[in-house]
Image 1 (cartoon, helix red, strand yellow):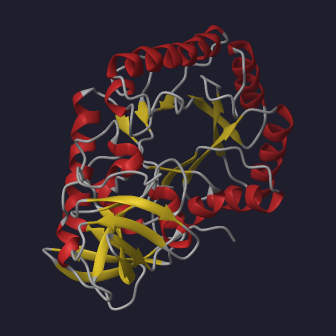
Image 2: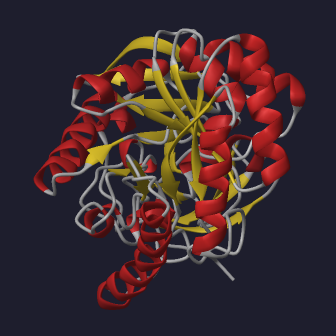
Image 3: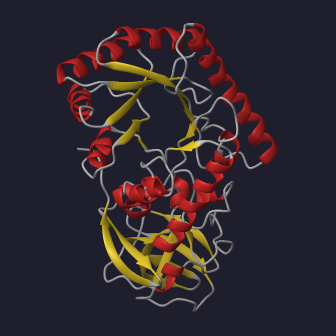
Length: 365
């Protein structure tokens, strides 16, 4: 099986830029800033806050641009990300995941002395542990009760459980219940827009039930957080959602282009052709540089098909004679957050020229 075709992906400005050493992570800053503005405008038009998920880009430089464009803060997936961004001056951070490692709970609690830190919870013992860490640090940590709205992953399963956890957090020193969150990730890659909307509305309906349960206990939900790149246009307009966590829109990839083609590809991996046989070119970027989940990588700006992705190599069928050994190509990754996490830095391109190098921050300790 030859895999996915790349001809439909529009060429990006980064294609003309040669990078001294490959494989290299390349950010088209002009495209990224256009994407930032587009999502900010979408959220504002629907009267919804935007708290971009920084797990996608792991870049304080991009986070600052998102906040300057109107984002209310950022979302992270891990304590490592949250602390890395806090060290760079980002002062309103949601960790949209449960944190159960004592060292990481303590570090977040200490950061909360100076910053607004909010953490997702779905377990009574974890709530008590987090409260103890915050009390010991002399801080207040916000909590959002996560509700499973269809992913079957983390999150309480019943609205009453959400209310009970919020009440517990309200009674414990060191914690501040701020509302609820859910993630309709099971809807994001539905290629049928009618089905995607119907499923997203049903998922957010489950979040609404949790909000009602909190309100019945006298705990209004200040924050109702949900949303991803593929459903942002829907979720941002649904009550009772107050903010969305979409993140990959700033970079884009093959996976998200299936449902969110209005955003430009700003992230590519630059690679060098190291072997050529007939219509097959082999490049020096494989799973260790591109990732390998959710969708196959595709050549950018060159008609071709993905043949394989191995550990250190990937192969593409192109027009015979189209490329030579030593030529560079740009590759649109299958899933941007995974690819970014494999690299130490971005080569930042603006106006067709490499203008900077930005570190990738917040990888695991």
